[in-house]
Amino acid sequence: MEQDITLKKEGQSLAFLKPLLAKITPKFQKGDLLAWLKKTGITILSITLFLGLWHMGSKALYNKEADFKIEKALTEQGQAAADAERACIESGESSCQPNTLPAPTQVWASLQSLIADHKVITADKAAFAEKMAATNEKLIAQGKNAIVYTGRASFIDIVLTSIKTVFAGFLLALLIAVPIGIIIGLSPTLRSAFNWFIQIFKPVSPVVWYLLVFMIVKTLYIGDNSDNAFVISFISVGLCAMWATLVNTAMGVSSVDKDYINVAKVLKLGTFQKVFKVILPSSLPLIFTGLRITLSVAWMVLIAIELLAQSQGLGLFVWEEFQNGANDSNSKIIVAMFVIGIIGFLLDRLMLTVQNMVSFNKNEGV
Amino acid sequence: MSTETTIDKSMTENGIFYPSKVMLDLSKLKKVYPTPKGDYVVLEDLDLQIMKEEFVTIIGHSGCGKTTMLSMIAGLNPISGGNIAVLGNPVKGPGPDRGVIFQSPSLMPWMTALQNVMLGVNKVFSHATKLQRKDIAKYYLQKVGLEGAFDKKASELSQGMQQRVGIARAFAIKPKVLLLDEPFGMLDSLTRGELQDILIEIWNKEKITAVMITHDVDEAIFLADRVVMMTSGPSAKIGDILNIDFERPRTRKSVLEHNDYYTYRKHLIDFLEH
Image 1 (tube, rainbow over the protein chains, first blue to last red):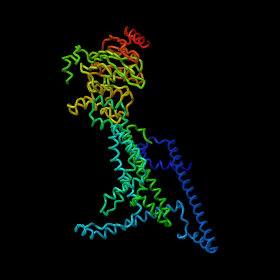
Image 2 (cartoon, each protein chain N blue to C red):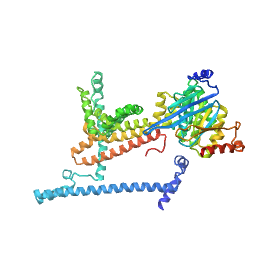
Image 3 (cartoon, rainbow over the protein chains, first blue to last red):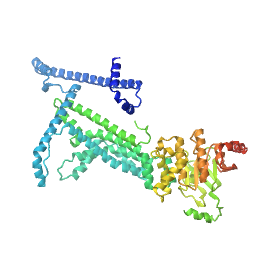
Image 4 (spheres, each protein chain N blue to C red):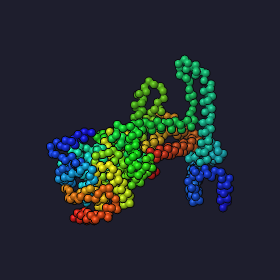
């Protein structure tokens, strides 16, 4: 009841917004509000449940490891050492904390420390640029390379690098797979000629693609000391992810509705017109389904490839934190996990929107 | 066009004289589909002449090869034997001189109604200005009662509206022969009646030689100058031809009230039931 009253009050004070709201919201009814509340309620409930389970799980793991440490001190060094160990763990001293699945609160703290760290690094960079401005101008005037900031990358920079890599890889996949897909889709001869190639290379794992690209790029960059990790990782990502687009494009182009082809035949459209006015538009929905899969595969394999290529992205960040084994490393890994998941989700939504825009059957796609 | 000159000669390679009234000539037409069990003969020894400005409907049981025949005239299906000639010129492949209205509207769903009609108009009237071409397309869309839907996407139109666009598209390219493959078969009877009226109204103006396949006896009588009955396959041929002597323009009411109507109807049904 109380909720009802507050809602009414709000409704009155926002009365001037009513005509505007009526325009943007299609007839908002009482039932809709209830359904919306129910839906949000369920989501909030499930998030709470998830966090609760996570908290309890990490607590159990923490206790297990703490008990083991105390037990070990007791058997190896006697009662005094065990008491000291217990006191150390209880005091929260970082050197003797069990290193296990972090609790939600720790992860939250790590996220904030990463953001704070980003601010520090950004300030550092700005200060460096200011300090070096005069020197760099001179260097450039002399025809030499300017001195750039080579300090640690912040978490945000790392995320941006990953996004940049994934888009570069995606673009490469698009530029390779769509034209080839169209060509082999148009010609049954080429399709059967290419088929073995696609069937064999499609299931190859990202790691192997990375090694192949590494072999080639390393030789191409020979004598060049610039950092080729980015190049290697985006090419590998592109090659791993392009297969879905290639197969879908070829399938879309080769399976155009026979009626459309007959119309094109009756009107005697030229090859160019037939391809660009009939075949391509009708296969666009399938091509975009392929591109959507490609983008999500690209994001999935990116992490493994960045790790191997030593490219300053999320993959390397996760691996380095794991190797690092510092007190907050585990919680940083979990932060990265959520960031990876959320970005992957957003990328998929982005592609879905584009896909729905080009699709002529509005009820296609999930 | 080159065909214009051949009308005057009215001769084919075989040296047979064709009365210049003949628009479409099928002679000894044969269609064979090879199957693992041997050849399946769909059509054999099919002879049919269709005059200029004639509306012919073709009726027969499903699977007798009506659609095969029509798609062979359209040039979409290769001929196994015999000959098809339009104004004395043998058919070698599809072309815009034979407009087709398909059973399903077959519009490009990503294009608007106008763009769909323009696709053909652009091709056939390539010498005209863009404005002229647009006017042609709009004229025919108006004729089929779609003046308000030029810029609607084809996928947003109802089945009946889509088939109207199909009719406009076929007439707009000014074909010599119009081929209609059960164009109203997928529509409900009310819409079907409406579209028959629209079709016959445009046809009365343009008088394009038309060959239409139908399953509907009433539709066959209402639209046609002659109803061609095909025997059941395999090896289907022309079974019987019925002349419909109602004067044009006709109205549905006048046809239904005509004394001969039920005689014609009985004739067709008798044929189909044997």
